[in-house]
Length: 349
Image (cartoon, rainbow, N blue to C red; front, side):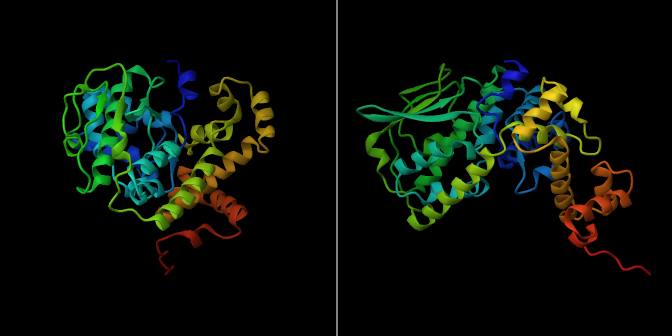
């Protein structure tokens, strides 16, 4: 798959940093430092720790490539990462799944909001007379990282089922097909047998018996479900709004705000002329200068709230001195930057 194909792949959508932090946790468990994992992504540890931060799929893919290049064993690392899944790290989607009355409704919610999960697989279902087949379509995942994401997404799914059961649902017979060389350890919590499991398969799918779908989830709460679904809808709408050209430019700028590329350099990376880029941005009712301004504004707010000094923020955003940054900040917000700092500014002596 070429770089251009990867840029337009289904999985290259804006996502929260929760799944990325799980990858970094796996890396740390194997002695790999964060800078080594983040090399080539333009991301920083501080940025990834922000609860509201979004990254693109290709940035997570680069992290996984860095991980595999140094540690190997993509499938095993993926399984280990998938088992780090927590419902709380998934935000409204995680709590929506926990609040569903039945397994069937949880599957429907998962399919509806797949792009809030951070999955690299398209999650679809098909129904037969005896069961419902959950398909993990990873056909457009690059071959060099496919086993990792297969392990992560498949192990994550099995882990979700085991948590939803809460020990209160019976185990079930399922037909499993997976590219993985083994099943995650948590599979034993939900599967009664492994006799109908095909490992090293050419596809990834799980067939659940229809009777299992209507079993109640112990944590069901319809009022909470209604609220979480509303939050998921808003979140999905807001993320969909930034998947176009503007989002791609923002991602390029975020790689190094201390020395951001100019419009011509960005246009070249997007395989177009600066005149064509200008025309496309006009069609989206924005401009390159406006995007740079918004990215800097957001970064300034985040860094100041994190307690960084004004001089450090000015340096990170590419300003020659504090005065230049302070003037820009006042134009943006109508007040001095020190007013937004989360740490107290020592009084002058």
